[in-house]
Image (cartoon, rainbow, N blue to C red; front, top):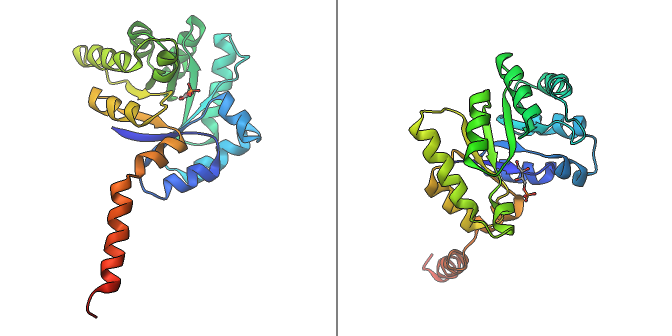
Length: 216
Ligand code: E4P
Protein backbone atom coordinates (compact mmCIF):
# COMPACT_ATOMS: atom_id res chain seq x y z
CA UNK A 1 0.00 0.00 0.00
CA UNK A 2 1.31 3.42 -0.97
CA UNK A 3 0.83 6.60 1.06
CA UNK A 4 -0.72 9.90 0.01
CA UNK A 5 -1.12 12.77 2.44
CA UNK A 6 -4.61 14.20 2.91
CA UNK A 7 -4.05 17.92 3.43
CA UNK A 8 -3.63 21.27 1.66
CA UNK A 9 -1.14 22.52 4.26
CA UNK A 10 2.21 22.82 2.48
CA UNK A 11 4.26 22.74 5.69
CA UNK A 12 2.70 19.39 6.58
CA UNK A 13 3.29 18.10 3.04
CA UNK A 14 6.92 19.26 3.06
CA UNK A 15 7.63 17.52 6.38
CA UNK A 16 6.10 14.16 5.48
CA UNK A 17 7.58 14.29 1.96
CA UNK A 18 11.01 14.66 3.55
CA UNK A 19 10.53 11.21 5.14
CA UNK A 20 10.59 9.77 1.61
CA UNK A 21 7.26 7.98 2.02
CA UNK A 22 4.86 10.07 -0.05
CA UNK A 23 3.51 8.94 -3.43
CA UNK A 24 0.91 11.70 -3.73
CA UNK A 25 -1.43 14.24 -2.14
CA UNK A 26 -5.20 14.53 -1.87
CA UNK A 27 -7.04 17.77 -1.24
CA UNK A 28 -10.72 18.65 -1.06
CA UNK A 29 -12.61 21.97 -0.83
CA UNK A 30 -12.69 21.79 2.99
CA UNK A 31 -8.92 21.22 3.22
CA UNK A 32 -8.18 24.06 0.75
CA UNK A 33 -10.50 26.39 2.74
CA UNK A 34 -8.64 25.41 5.94
CA UNK A 35 -5.31 26.36 4.31
CA UNK A 36 -6.64 29.92 3.89
CA UNK A 37 -5.13 30.12 0.39
CA UNK A 38 -6.39 30.25 -3.19
CA UNK A 39 -6.87 26.81 -4.81
CA UNK A 40 -4.49 27.46 -7.75
CA UNK A 41 -1.74 28.91 -5.52
CA UNK A 42 -1.73 26.09 -3.03
CA UNK A 43 -2.01 23.37 -5.69
CA UNK A 44 0.91 24.82 -7.70
CA UNK A 45 3.08 24.86 -4.59
CA UNK A 46 2.15 21.26 -3.80
CA UNK A 47 3.21 20.13 -7.29
CA UNK A 48 6.66 21.60 -6.57
CA UNK A 49 6.97 19.56 -3.37
CA UNK A 50 5.65 16.11 -4.34
CA UNK A 51 6.34 14.32 -7.63
CA UNK A 52 3.24 12.12 -7.55
CA UNK A 53 -0.51 12.19 -8.09
CA UNK A 54 -2.05 15.41 -6.72
CA UNK A 55 -5.84 15.38 -6.43
CA UNK A 56 -7.61 18.72 -6.87
CA UNK A 57 -11.38 18.69 -6.55
CA UNK A 58 -13.90 20.44 -8.77
CA UNK A 59 -15.80 23.15 -6.90
CA UNK A 60 -18.50 21.92 -4.56
CA UNK A 61 -20.94 24.20 -6.40
CA UNK A 62 -20.18 22.60 -9.78
CA UNK A 63 -22.87 19.97 -10.29
CA UNK A 64 -23.33 19.70 -14.06
CA UNK A 65 -21.11 17.30 -16.02
CA UNK A 66 -20.25 19.94 -18.65
CA UNK A 67 -19.07 22.36 -15.93
CA UNK A 68 -17.02 19.65 -14.22
CA UNK A 69 -15.41 18.75 -17.55
CA UNK A 70 -14.45 22.39 -18.23
CA UNK A 71 -13.10 22.80 -14.70
CA UNK A 72 -11.38 19.40 -14.83
CA UNK A 73 -9.50 20.36 -17.99
CA UNK A 74 -8.29 23.54 -16.24
CA UNK A 75 -7.13 21.56 -13.19
CA UNK A 76 -5.32 19.08 -15.45
CA UNK A 77 -3.46 21.96 -17.14
CA UNK A 78 -1.88 23.05 -13.84
CA UNK A 79 0.64 20.17 -13.88
CA UNK A 80 1.14 16.73 -15.44
CA UNK A 81 0.62 15.08 -12.04
CA UNK A 82 -2.83 16.58 -11.46
CA UNK A 83 -5.74 14.25 -10.83
CA UNK A 84 -9.24 15.70 -11.12
CA UNK A 85 -11.36 14.77 -8.12
CA UNK A 86 -15.02 14.40 -8.98
CA UNK A 87 -17.97 13.54 -6.71
CA UNK A 88 -19.92 10.29 -7.08
CA UNK A 89 -23.07 11.43 -8.86
CA UNK A 90 -24.62 10.66 -12.25
CA UNK A 91 -23.21 13.97 -13.54
CA UNK A 92 -19.87 13.10 -11.96
CA UNK A 93 -19.77 9.76 -13.80
CA UNK A 94 -20.48 11.53 -17.11
CA UNK A 95 -17.63 13.94 -16.44
CA UNK A 96 -15.26 11.09 -15.51
CA UNK A 97 -16.13 9.29 -18.75
CA UNK A 98 -15.34 12.39 -20.85
CA UNK A 99 -12.13 13.31 -19.01
CA UNK A 100 -10.79 9.76 -18.95
CA UNK A 101 -11.27 9.48 -22.73
CA UNK A 102 -9.14 12.63 -23.01
CA UNK A 103 -6.40 10.95 -20.97
CA UNK A 104 -7.02 13.07 -17.87
CA UNK A 105 -6.60 11.23 -14.57
CA UNK A 106 -9.65 11.26 -12.28
CA UNK A 107 -10.40 10.37 -8.67
CA UNK A 108 -14.05 9.61 -7.91
CA UNK A 109 -14.69 10.83 -4.37
CA UNK A 110 -17.41 10.33 -1.75
CA UNK A 111 -17.67 6.58 -2.37
CA UNK A 112 -19.71 4.77 0.29
CA UNK A 113 -20.70 1.49 -1.41
CA UNK A 114 -18.93 -1.13 -3.57
CA UNK A 115 -21.46 -0.49 -6.34
CA UNK A 116 -20.56 3.20 -6.46
CA UNK A 117 -16.91 2.14 -6.76
CA UNK A 118 -17.75 -0.29 -9.58
CA UNK A 119 -19.71 2.38 -11.47
CA UNK A 120 -16.85 4.87 -11.12
CA UNK A 121 -14.33 2.29 -12.33
CA UNK A 122 -16.48 1.40 -15.34
CA UNK A 123 -16.82 5.11 -16.18
CA UNK A 124 -13.03 5.17 -16.41
CA UNK A 125 -11.92 6.59 -13.05
CA UNK A 126 -8.19 6.27 -12.39
CA UNK A 127 -8.85 6.18 -8.64
CA UNK A 128 -11.83 5.69 -6.34
CA UNK A 129 -11.91 7.16 -2.84
CA UNK A 130 -14.03 5.20 -0.35
CA UNK A 131 -14.49 7.21 2.90
CA UNK A 132 -14.05 4.83 5.83
CA UNK A 133 -14.00 7.29 8.75
CA UNK A 134 -17.29 8.90 7.77
CA UNK A 135 -18.89 5.43 7.62
CA UNK A 136 -17.53 4.55 11.07
CA UNK A 137 -19.03 7.86 12.28
CA UNK A 138 -22.53 6.61 11.38
CA UNK A 139 -22.04 3.15 12.88
CA UNK A 140 -21.06 1.23 9.71
CA UNK A 141 -17.68 -0.51 9.50
CA UNK A 142 -15.62 1.46 6.97
CA UNK A 143 -12.93 -1.21 6.59
CA UNK A 144 -15.61 -3.66 5.36
CA UNK A 145 -16.20 -1.27 2.44
CA UNK A 146 -12.50 -1.31 1.53
CA UNK A 147 -12.45 -5.13 1.69
CA UNK A 148 -15.56 -5.38 -0.53
CA UNK A 149 -14.17 -3.02 -3.17
CA UNK A 150 -10.81 -4.83 -3.19
CA UNK A 151 -12.65 -8.14 -3.72
CA UNK A 152 -14.89 -6.82 -6.52
CA UNK A 153 -11.97 -5.18 -8.35
CA UNK A 154 -9.84 -8.34 -8.01
CA UNK A 155 -12.63 -10.65 -9.25
CA UNK A 156 -13.16 -8.47 -12.32
CA UNK A 157 -9.54 -7.54 -13.01
CA UNK A 158 -10.28 -3.83 -12.60
CA UNK A 159 -7.18 -1.62 -12.61
CA UNK A 160 -8.74 1.48 -11.01
CA UNK A 161 -6.74 2.12 -7.84
CA UNK A 162 -8.43 2.22 -4.44
CA UNK A 163 -7.52 5.17 -2.23
CA UNK A 164 -8.68 4.52 1.34
CA UNK A 165 -9.86 8.01 2.37
CA UNK A 166 -11.31 9.61 5.49
CA UNK A 167 -8.61 7.81 7.45
CA UNK A 168 -8.73 8.83 11.11
CA UNK A 169 -6.30 6.63 13.06
CA UNK A 170 -3.51 4.02 13.00
CA UNK A 171 -5.95 1.10 13.06
CA UNK A 172 -7.57 2.41 9.89
CA UNK A 173 -4.18 2.45 8.18
CA UNK A 174 -3.17 -1.08 9.17
CA UNK A 175 -6.62 -2.51 8.39
CA UNK A 176 -6.59 -0.87 4.94
CA UNK A 177 -3.11 -2.25 4.26
CA UNK A 178 -4.30 -5.76 5.24
CA UNK A 179 -7.45 -5.39 3.13
CA UNK A 180 -5.36 -4.60 0.05
CA UNK A 181 -6.10 -0.91 -0.57
CA UNK A 182 -3.65 0.38 -3.19
CA UNK A 183 -3.21 3.68 -1.36
CA UNK A 184 -4.20 5.23 1.96
CA UNK A 185 -4.50 8.99 2.06
CA UNK A 186 -3.44 9.82 5.57
CA UNK A 187 -3.78 13.08 7.55
CA UNK A 188 -0.61 14.65 8.99
CA UNK A 189 -1.56 13.86 12.60
CA UNK A 190 -1.97 10.16 11.76
CA UNK A 191 1.44 10.06 10.01
CA UNK A 192 2.98 11.45 13.21
CA UNK A 193 1.25 8.88 15.39
CA UNK A 194 2.23 6.03 13.00
CA UNK A 195 5.87 7.02 13.49
CA UNK A 196 6.18 6.72 17.23
CA UNK A 197 6.08 4.01 19.87
CA UNK A 198 7.01 4.40 23.57
CA UNK A 199 9.37 1.38 23.32
CA UNK A 200 11.21 3.00 20.40
CA UNK A 201 11.63 6.21 22.45
CA UNK A 202 12.77 4.23 25.52
CA UNK A 203 15.17 2.17 23.38
CA UNK A 204 16.79 5.28 21.88
CA UNK A 205 17.15 6.85 25.35
CA UNK A 206 18.88 3.70 26.66
CA UNK A 207 21.22 3.40 23.64
CA UNK A 208 22.26 7.05 24.08
CA UNK A 209 22.87 6.56 27.81
CA UNK A 210 24.85 3.33 27.24
CA UNK A 211 26.91 5.00 24.49
CA UNK A 212 27.76 7.85 26.88
CA UNK A 213 28.80 5.30 29.56
CA UNK A 214 30.79 3.05 27.23
CA UNK A 215 34.58 2.83 27.30
CA UNK A 216 35.95 5.32 24.78
C1 E4P B 1 -9.81 12.53 0.72
O1 E4P B 1 -9.79 12.27 -0.45
C2 E4P B 1 -11.05 12.94 1.44
O2 E4P B 1 -11.50 14.14 0.95
C3 E4P B 1 -10.78 13.00 2.91
O3 E4P B 1 -10.02 11.87 3.29
C4 E4P B 1 -12.02 13.13 3.76
O4 E4P B 1 -11.69 12.96 5.10
P1 E4P B 1 -12.66 13.37 6.28
O5 E4P B 1 -13.84 12.45 6.27
O6 E4P B 1 -11.82 13.20 7.52
O7 E4P B 1 -13.07 14.80 6.05
